[in-house]
Image (cartoon, rainbow, N blue to C red; front, side):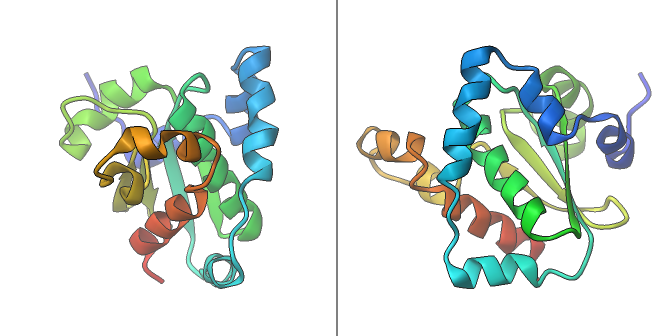
Length: 165
């Protein structure tokens, strides 16, 4: 099997709107609600808008997944704030087939976001949830807040750390 490059995977992926369109009526209905909850403070908004280099977000996602519904919506907002940022979404099957080896992952969880520069070189990877959620002692205690979008800015902060500008 020929391995696909990050660029080839990015090129064959879907844009955000097409990705959302693959969902059921209920899944699609959650997106505007999640989007309305993406409220970055002024400092984070400025950090995002000031990125001057080209950033490509190669996302492995499925619209039925709550983590994807939340965190890919953050990426959509970042792309709207900065025209140097672009998103492409591939399916979990394609991600597992072509990214597991490249990223050294036994299983490609969703979302897996590969942050790429203008030459499609990997800057870093975001897996599933922001670090603040993954590193919590008691996930059950924060799960409802997470699902209600209270950690969306944390996702953006984690992505900005990887972008590093």
